[in-house]
Amino acid sequence: MAACAGSVRLSVLRLIVFWTLLGAPLAAQERSILVVDLDRAYEISIYGKSMREQFRKDNQDVAAENTLILNALKDEELQLTEDRANLSAEEFAAAAAAFDAKVQKIRSARLEKIRQVDEQFKGLKPQFFKRIEPFFDLIMQQFNATVILEKSSILRSIEGIDITELLVERVDEAYLADN
Image 1 (cartoon, rainbow, N blue to C red):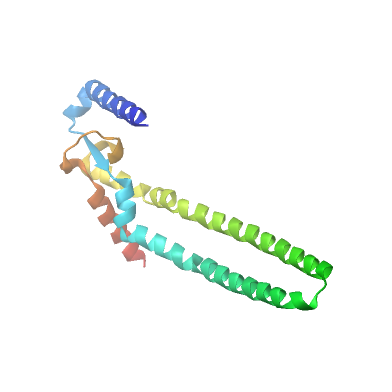
Image 2: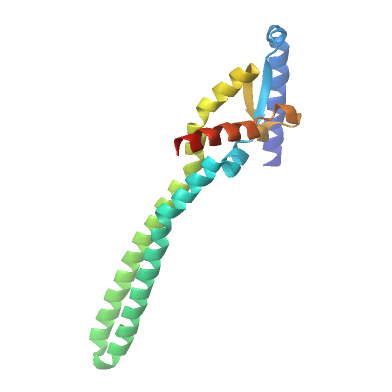
């Protein structure tokens, strides 16, 4: 994996050097390269935090439902255990098998629900990135930039070209203005 990351960084570095050499006429126009840390923007922005908080609120019912279901199944299991004394071996075996089938069905349904919630959570970050795309154009125009690179693919850069804080500020201003 480290070799792959090194290879990617080397490829990006080669691309930057190649682009710089071919882009000499563009340099005369004072174009710049900007860097952004998208993960950090998602983590620290008010908008990103509000997306995650809303997701938690929307899905807190899943945990409450799981607790209710678990408690009901525990009660049913205790009742089955108490009824064992009054049931024949065949009747108890049938009741136990029915209870087990019910538990397995509920378990499968709950696991599917948890999988769906997990997929929704994983989709928050790409959704955030998609929604902030217009801000990149505005910032590129402001800095007369030709490209914005993801900070994680950069081997080394100066802090002056990192627009993460500016991006977060602009996204949050727009978000707060709408809410």
